[in-house]
Amino acid sequence: MNTNQQYDKAISACQDIFIKKTKDYGTSWRVYRTISIVDQIYIKAKRIRTIQEKGEQKIGDDILSEFKGILNYAIIGLIQLDLQKDETDELPVELVDKMYSEKVGIAKKLMLDKNHDYGEAWREMSQESFADLILAKLLRIKQILVNDGKTIISEGIDANYYDIINYAAFALILIEEGKH
Image (cartoon, rainbow, N blue to C red):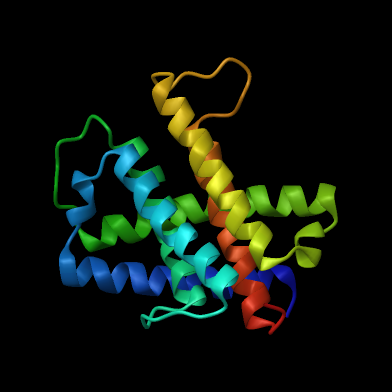
């Protein structure tokens, strides 16, 4: 499989989980503010880092499932940014699926553009680097929130979420290949 196919496969697995959970729980995540989403992703990235450092874990969710969760929470973050002024708590599953696909489409285009320029350098990166990069992106989002959502020269919250999606997808691809 090529990168395009591997990316689609990784995303499809995440989207399948996301839509099934939406059917189970509805869109209860609509109550999350940006900082709460960032903290959810932080918990997962920090857990990955802890497992990497200790070389063991005591609860069932593995690193693979944590990267899937990170990717899905980043999608939630992007959807929430779009719906900030919308008071609707419950969204139809079909709409959620459509919004998810739209966000993934943007993330994939970004990935393809960056792959063109960087020559798929991510394939030589360690799983530890993906966890660290995600944590750094979360710290950037937190700082942007402290700055009332404004940046002087840097990208906004949404760009950081898109990078998180792609880092998580890369980690999932490399895990699937048996490299991590």
